[in-house]
Length: 251
Image (cartoon, rainbow, N blue to C red; front, side, top):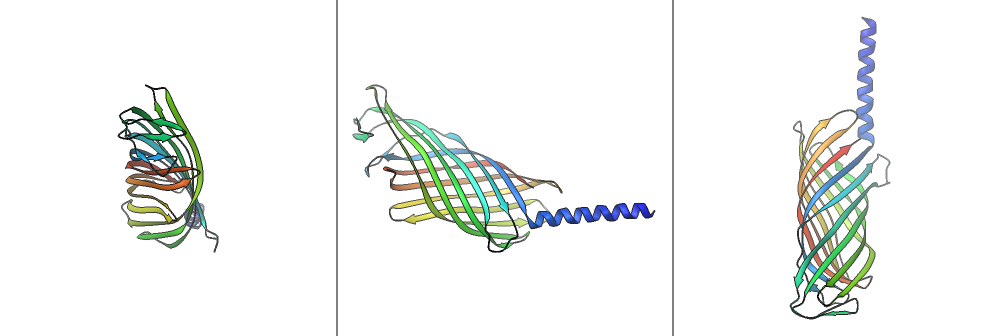
């Protein structure tokens, strides 16, 4: 009898310790599949040209670490692909990478962009009902833009990269004892001639909650707007948006 009571007490202590450890610090790992609709255009001068793009499935992967140490921010790294391509009949002449593309010609455009967010943030408020994070985001953009006119065998491409500092925030609302929650997360910059935003809103369902790991399904909408002027000699005014589905693990 005493042994049974001792085992039960030890079991309760282990559960309590594990729950406390999860409260004190946690690691979040997530993956999302994003059905992306792309619009807008680009150039290597201020006279940008709009292109037609096909819908594309892109991905986003992230990891975040939260801790209880005062004054030291939590860390989140998010890597997103923004790739798309399409075929466009030009309405006007267009110059890109030193090549001239004439009006009424049919060109293939290709966008290959990787965006990596390095986010430092503080949890200003955190409980089962509502949480609020605030911080800064250094968004590193690395990409290649290409235009090809197969009829005239004309092709040009430009590579570019740069870091864009942004403000970051996240608000999450929970419905206790149901596993359901919703969040809005975003980063924004408007400075000089650059205007960049990246936000997403989603509903979540936590279908596994255990001592070892929590697993949460996500369904939401994401929008990325890139309006840049002379970033590494590239000008662009583009929008990427669409629905996504994701899975998050919390250790």
